Length: 235
Image (cartoon, rainbow, N blue to C red; front, side, top):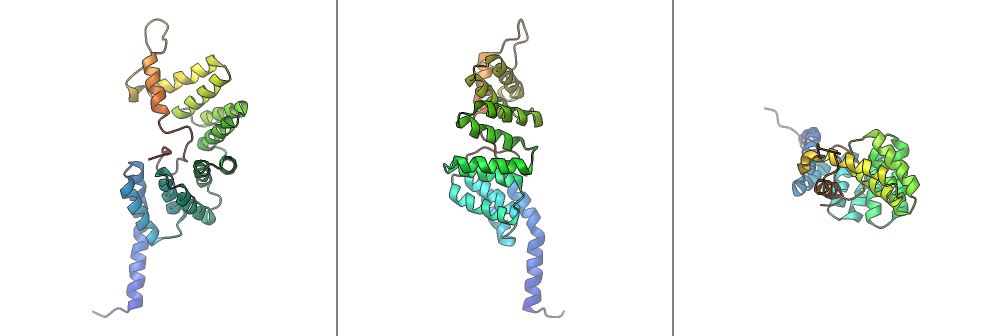
C-alpha cells in the first residue's frame, strides 16, 4: 500500500465533506420543517462548515435565527446569501420579514416589492406587501394584494383571514364573510368543525372562532415557502 501525501489526504477529505453537503442541508431543512430547532441549528452549522458560502444554507439558517428572535444576526446571514444570489426572490421576502421585526417597516416593504418584482407569482410577497400597506392605512391597495395572493393560491387560510379582516375595516361585511367561510372550510379538519348542514347552513360560531384562532397563531406575514414550507414568524 502506497503512502499518501498530506495534500492528497486533505483533498480527499475535503471532497468527501463536499459530497455530504446536500444530505446535511436536507437533514437541516427536515429538522427545521419539523420544528426541531436545536437539531436544525446544529445541522446548519455543519453544512456551513463544509460550504460557508452556500446561499441556501445561509438563507435558511438566517430564517431560523429570525424565528428564534435573533433578528440582527439573522439579517447578517440573509444579507450574505443575497450577496451571493441577489436575484433570489424568497430571500428578499425573508429579508423584509426580518427588517419588519427590527422595526424598519419602510425597508421591509421595499424588500417585499423587490421579491415580487423577481417573482410576480409569489403569494407570500403579495400578502406581506398587503400587510405592510394595511398597517400604513392603505386598505384599498392592501385588499388588491391579498386578492392577488389568493388568485395564485386560494388555499392560504391565513391570507383569507387577513383579507377578511381588511374588508371588515372597510365595512364590506358580506365580502369579509365570504373569506371567513373559506377560512373555516380550509381549517375544518384541523379544528374538527364544519358548516352546519341543516337549514340555512349558517356558520357555527364556535367553529369560526376556532378556525380564526388557528389561522392567526403565526401572525399575519408569511415567510417565503422555500424548501420547508411557509413557517411561522416565531419559535
